[in-house]
Image (cartoon, rainbow, N blue to C red; front, top):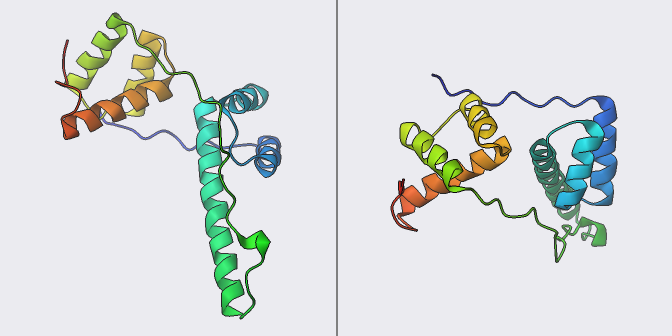
Length: 157
């Protein structure tokens, strides 16, 4: 079975308008806001989170470019060129806890393939009843622990 990348998420003009308006008001939306947007525009919350990450990165590079141009034209940068700060406190998504049977399924899948493709992750997510993004994060964390050797053995089951 080949590992396939997730297909690029394509947003409609209406969806983009909603996302851009929200981004202009708050570039770091809380989990609850991302959940609300997911329901409003019918897209997974994880895809909205990635969109905001990409948009922040794009705006960061745009701000750097503008700052560089301002310095080159011997004009001192104004207040509007300073990078926007992150909010001091964010509402986080609740920590995902896995049952022993879910962990057993995840460990078996990890033993077979520590780098599952999107289709495998989606099947696992459906089987154990969690979002695919949580399965992806679990595999990333497990690989990290395997490489660093922390938190005991990689396969307790």
